[in-house]
Amino acid sequence: MTILVTGATGNVGGNVVDQLVKRGADVRALVRDPSKAELPDAVEVVRGDMLDVDSLRSAMSGISTLFLLNGVVADEFTQALITLNVARETGVKRVVYLSVIHSDVYVNVPHFAGKFGVERMIDAMGFEATILRPAYYMDNEITIRDIVREHGVYPMPIGDKGLAMIDVRDIGELAAIELIRRDNSAEPLPTTRMNLVGPETLTGAEVAAIWSDVLGRTIVFPGNDTAGFERNMRQAMPSWMAYDMRQMADRFQTEGMIPEPGDVTRLTDILGRPLRTYRDHVAQIAA
Image (cartoon, rainbow, N blue to C red; front, side, top):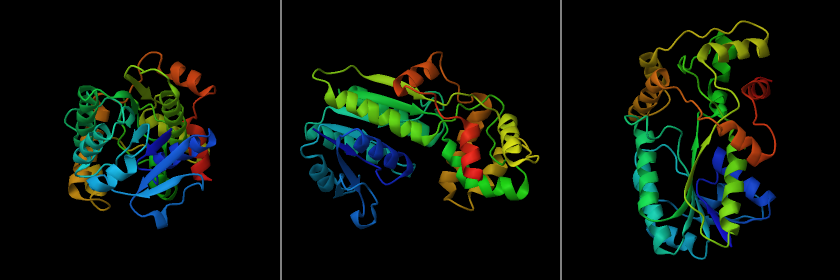
């Protein structure tokens, strides 16, 4: 029984692969350039692309379970649907899909709406699936670490409702556990949805206070200027993506990313340990 991991060279996918290998699973990784893939020796690396149907057919030959992860790109929805169609065509029935929390609420945010569309297709196509819905990644903070340290400002407009940020190492481990649970099951398992959240729901002001404690000096949260956030993002990414991020930040203001009752307990029970905290993550990346 072999598990195919897409997005295997990224931060989340790499953690999924590592956790699967640690648990003795047979893993095949779909990558665009095998020569650049720094993956464990036990992993079968195959060249492919989610828009290259022939490479997908080859990669899915003989696999039992699919981990579907695709990045925030302009054709994300098309990539996912092609991959799911090829999976069904080649007889793959078991899928774990990395969606996003509140995909059915952030309906005007392009990459959220796309992921919700993929969820609906998974249901309609009859896969035996787990939909993982992670909240905001703690690891995003690596991209703004230098701004915080050099300017004394936490620049992300994450709002006052609160985000239940999660460490990608926890995402990787939870995904691996779920992939193996499905892969090892002798009987079909019902489709389930699982919010992946951290142990705390933090506002912008609370996050700035944690940075202040860790760094030993005052870090300010200047507020929630999402228009300014979009302008800044356009310096590092295409305009459509910056606009997408701005729409997400706007929904941070109105909805936040709030766990459902029992989410934290459920994840803690699955892991058999506490979820990693934002404070510990900041202490690690700020060192």
